[in-house]
Image (cartoon, rainbow, N blue to C red; front, side):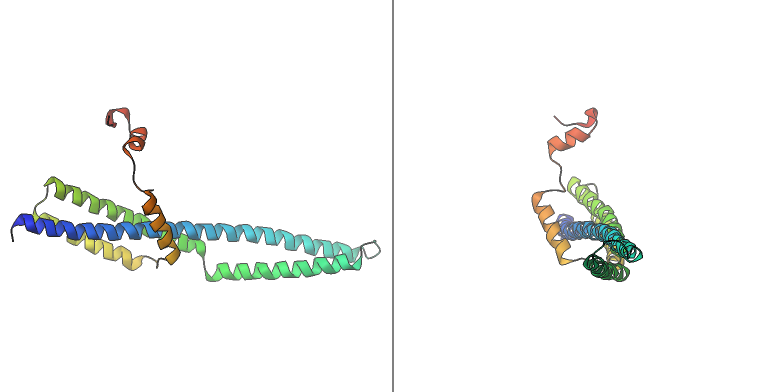
Length: 196
């Protein structure tokens, strides 16, 4: 087999690896976003439930201490019931956060996405070098082997992805969110680097 055929085979293999890393990067990115959203919502719920619970308890205490006031008994009873239910909900949320640290999961997915982004760009650079004819077979194999080793290291330390992250990544890729048009690139490049 001549070098041209070998390079075509290696190019095909590297393109597949690039695709895998690209997808996995996007899934981790979407999982990080999802867990950040969960964490943020839980924190807001904790604040709201704490405020409602505290307000209910204060109104119960004020109602009891002002027993000579004209507060109907049902108001005190209702405030007690509401405070108890809200406190129980707060306990559930606090327990959930203790067992599932969404902020930690978000950070782990973001870290994996960042490492995969670096790998993705290295795979892409190798593909450009192959297309430009800047590397020979031995150099391609050496860089491929290094990239595969680094990819496995990232996969080993990365958290598991979710089906929801996969769905969001698929939507993102179909919409072309990750690519720039010539016009959008020209808007962010300095004048001397813009294409006509």
